[in-house]
Length: 413
Image 1 (cartoon, one colour):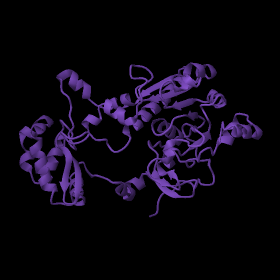
Image 2: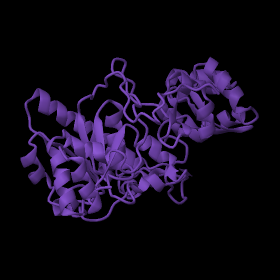
Image 3: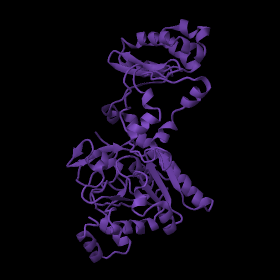
Image 4: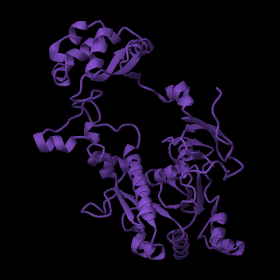
């Protein structure tokens, strides 16, 4: 397949491309795995200089998660592109001192340790803000920096459960299931990125100082849970799992076809009439009792049965062709293979070929969101552990002899 390419960055770690919207922004990333690093990834794609601090020896555990190519996770290749790796022992006094020097010159610090960890290392916000009053500090944790659960360990999966998401995933009466990805971590990262950009705007436009952005995994999930609590508050209603259906909205579900499933969203009033005409059920489309959503919800089982009676003998492609012509929203359930072969993804530059530092070409997701004037870019491939240690330390004024001595004492690698 002929694929859109990003520049070959295997031999040139930091290419000079068109300036990003965040060019000149200095970010120190202390997080690991998903939540903190995803925020760093997002800032880096729009031009920020992201220095990722990793523990010497092992580095970020994400380097070894899921499927490995030459000993490195292909997930790492996406999560850590556009970053520089500094292998620094933050548990050592010397390492902490170096970190403070870096942070003193930074705009943003990202961390997702358990609350109190940085304070134990002498890097709480009170200390760091004395060194750098303009510092914006993103802190992502399981339950936030305050409250009775503050010190409990928390991963994205637990945040999804506490945020209310897990209760709604799966089939009615069955064991709750995860959505298939680490959505809790990613939602926290996106909320954190919004917080960082908001704080930077306040600092620049309103003359404000830096500040802490406190993001809890469960709160990030809870923030996207729609009317879950208002419905309980007003009516005592507890929303339950509904499988592939959209509760209270009809018809909107996944329907069996001859060779798979198709999702159909026929819940708009005019869309519903077009859908019924398309499947040969003008009687339902013209029924006054079904003219609005409330009436359709009361007869959702009947409508779902009518739609599936039409889809079941037909292939997915045929169903989509007919419904598309009728302007009824519908889509297939994509696999990774479907995405990789889809022309719309390619036309939108959402599939890019990126060369790893080991010389492999892999397909990776493009950059979201799309800025027309200052688009996000992939300027460099994901670094090896400590690839940029010397350059980062030299930028702080350390000589080659200084760096060699630090390496000998295992403060850096």
